[in-house]
Amino acid sequence: MDITEYISLVFTDYTLRTITLGTAILGAICGMLGSFAVLRKQSLLGDAISHAALPGIAIAFLIMGAKNSNVLLLGALISGLIGTFWIRGITSKTHLKSDTALGLILSLFFGFGMLLLTYIQKQPNANQAGLDKYLFGQAATLVESDVWLMGIVTGVCLLVMLLFWKEFKILLFDADYTKTLGFNTKFIDILITTFIVLAIVLGLQTVGVVLMSAMLLAPAAAARQWTNSLGIMVFLAAIFGASSGVLGTAISASHNNLSTGPVIVLVAAVFVLFSFIFSPSRGLLFREIRFRKNRNDLHLHKTLSFMYNIAKDHEDISHPHAIKILNNFHGFTKKSLQSLEHKNYIHIQGNMWSMTQEGYHKAANLYNQQA
Image 1 (cartoon, rainbow, N blue to C red):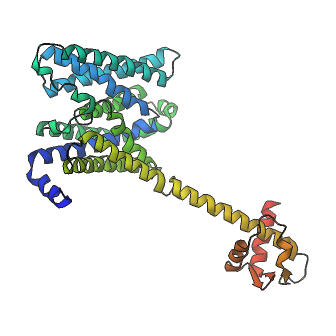
Image 2: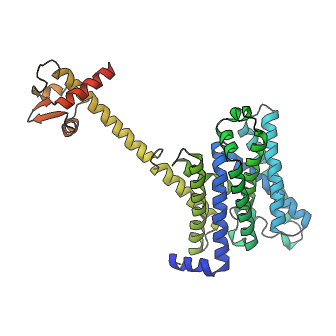
Image 3: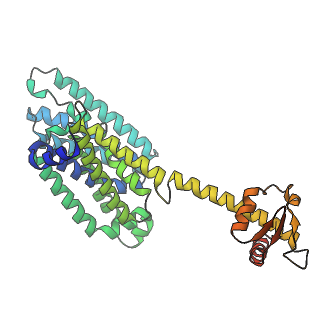
């Protein structure tokens, strides 16, 4: 299937249109809320909550006796919230750090969930078939009602972010100052965490328990490389997340035997890798370019300062000197001389060099700064 055929099918095929819209909305909301998790240094929170949701799915199925996706997701939401508040309780009531609490809750809830799934699979009831799809996700099971639910939650999330933007922003960067302003930091913290849990629960059906944390964190991690502004970061993370969903769905639909959830996560990982390398401010490529430029500038300045010390002993700064007197200077290279001549700091005639007026003043300033 080529790209034109895929675009045509998006508008005509109900299933493909539903999956594409669902993954795009899911990517957008995960990107937005993941930005707050990344900036709060709670990257493992998404992993813990997604694993904590598994026993809720199993218990909801045992109570209802049937696979109703809304009921299962409600059970996942309740279980995820319980796991979240247990993490908060362990962190605040004991001397354990947050990473330890996250690891404990993740292991405990996931182990309990796997135990329940094993128990369910051994029951003489055909309805439990496919319940383990929540482990790795199955985007093909998305229906229009699921997309509407995602859209409503995303809309509510946007509304809450607009209403509490100032409080969210202050809490992220200075919690103590937020308290001095009289804001209820506990309520704001719970509000952010609740929406993160909601986003994770919505994505379980599409991406699954195992990969959901990557869907939450990858777009935010990519967006963080491009900006220092919270608003721009949230916007970029939403764009990266939605693009990952759409592109992942397109790649999965264009090839047989490719699961949609893992492909979406891999596309999001490509965004992260690209951002890590090519972002202008933090990218590895531009960082290396700046490092090499600074190193070359340092060599030029050292060479120019050395030449200045020679030229200042003469009344005429343009007095020619032999290049060979620079041979014992470590910063000297023929390339550095060419660069200095290109900047009009020196003139070179054969094996002789002389300093220009511009180069003399530049070197004098450098020499004074070093002194």
